Structure formats: C-alpha cells, structure tokens
Length: 296
Image 1 (cartoon, one colour):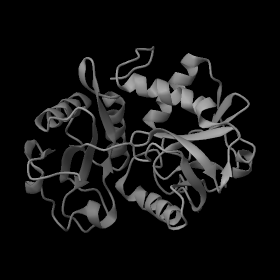
Image 2 (cartoon, one colour):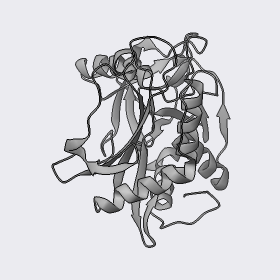
Image 3 (tube, one colour):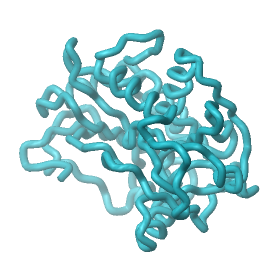
Image 4 (cartoon, one colour):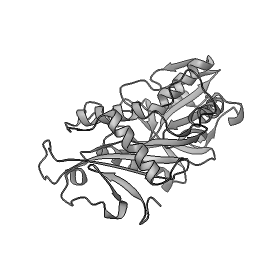
C-alpha cells in the first residue's frame, strides 16, 4: 500500500529504494516514542505539483524537534526541496507525504545525538473517506498539557489516538471525539473539530490540542468568507443542539460528520458552513481558487 520495490525515499542525505531503507531495532524512537513527524499533502494543479503549506508544516516539524530536544540539521527550505525531489522521483502529484525524524540506538531516556531524517510519499485518499462520519465520544482523554508538549507532533503521543480510534471502530463508529482533562471537547484522534450553531462556528482553543495547519486554513477561509468563529472551551452537552459539525486535518482534509453518539445534526451537510468551507478548501489546495490565503 505504501511502497513497492521501485519506490524511492529519502534517508539521511540519500535517495534510496524504500526496500533498502532500514532502522536499528534498538533505536530510542521505537522503544520510547521519542521522535517527531509531519503529515503533508501535495496536489496536482494547473501550475504543476504543489505541496500545500510546506513552510508551515516544516516549521512545525522543527518546532516539535526542538521541544523534544532533537537536534535537526536540515532547514525548512532544504526539507521542502527534498520533498519535491521525492515526489518527482516517484512521479507523484496527488500524494501524502510523511517526514519522520527518528533517533539512533540508545536505551537511555535522555537526549540522543544520532538523529535520522526520513521522507516518504504515497498515494492516499481522504483518510476518513468521502461519506459523512459517524462519531462517538471517546472514553479516552487527550494528555494533560503539563505531562508533555501537546502542541508538538510527537510519535509517542499517537498511542492515545490509536486507543481512541480502536475503541470507536470496535463499537461500529468511524471516528472518536476526545475531551481534554477538564472534560471539554478537544479534537479527534488525528483531526481538529468544529461545530456550527446559528450560523457561527465553534472550535477548541489553543492549550489542549494540536494546532493543526488545516485548522489554521479553515480559520483563514472563514475570515475571508465572513463566517464568525469562536475559539472557546465547551462541554459535549453543547453539541446536542448543534446544527452541523466537521473534522479537519491534512489526512482528513475537511470531513463532514453525520452524527455524534448516534445523534444526527439538524442541517443537511449540503446546507452547512462546513460543506461551504470544504468546497473552498478543495479548490484552494488544487489551485482552482486563489484567495488571500497562503497555499504554498
């Protein structure tokens, strides 16, 4: 699914076949989860292949590395250039891109100087699919922000996401919606969350969530469209009389929600603010719409 014997990846300064890329079994990332990564998309546009918001993604990658005491030797521009080369060597336009920074062999719990940089790409459809999503409120919570850097995209953090998603799917749902340590709605396992009520959007504020780059793009689109958005804490009870809701993230893009805990929303998705933003977002990333929003 992700590679074959002809797939080319980048690893530590070289472009090699994916089947020839290896990591030591005693690396700290595998044993203790100390590594950072990004999820990025590229799109085929009338002006050629374009990586959407590569600068913002790689700035966050470097920030995540800094928070985890990982020393990076690549700049944003260098990482962007590497990404375009990976796409070109694999003849990809519409692709999902995975930069991963993992550490060398070390069984101690302190910083590691052996830093490895891996960049791969594959063709991957919308993570949540094209249908509306059935969501359940998870029994799991997002980590306490004083226990880790929740704003960094860290390998080990995603155990929380795996648990929440596995629980949801085992109960017949498509995705999970998690709360924070105070019981406020936070985000999905791998996407941010918005809900609509009376022509206004609401979303969780900075502090207990990963500040998604797609989330920032949705806020930009909303501003351009004159849609009011309130970043505020809210409990799950606030969703009982919501008009609509959606997830947003690089893998999921903008994905409509059918129901939460089997409670459907009042508005048809086609009539919602989320659908309006979804269309604009898709046109933006594919270069069909040039608005006052940075798309490179």
